[in-house]
Length: 227
Image 1 (cartoon, rainbow, N blue to C red):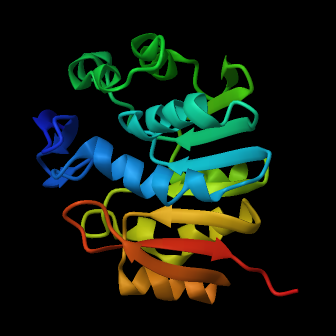
Image 2 (image 1 turned 30 degrees about the vertical axis):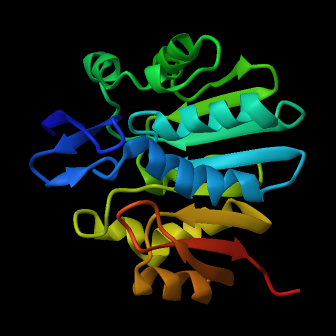
């Protein structure tokens, strides 16, 4: 897939796939979207000592970077296990040009951003004290074959349904649910009615929230298995 770099309205960059007419992040701001959806309405709502995150789409590594930033600010008394899947990794030239690290002030941001892209796939690495990072170069549907810790936070950040509709249908949500613990939170930028219905069918308690800049709504869904 041919990709090009584009600058979003908050000054951070994103990738654009010409053939699909699809951006990796909102053109209204890549960083503001990641922080709004996955930190403000995701990580900050999980209070367990051990936080096990499943990210659907490693992509540019931005969601991982905003999570690391939040961990270093507030959560160093927690243990993080971050599992992320990506079928089509970005290349080093793209990583350098995206240059997300310049937007963060924590120590060694550039080194850490580069490191998470260079780490060996399918292997767990302790990238910071008590922050364990595992990335898989696999199709999302292969998640069912991977033994993960019980997930209490899902970053559902797949490409939009208009270009990859199968990623927003019941079979994949069933796989994701099978990896989650009761009370686990799934957060996504999507607010599609069909997605809300599927999640409700799967015993999620679904809430519509204010979306990131440029998007009216997004979804939070908490897994509530019948007792």
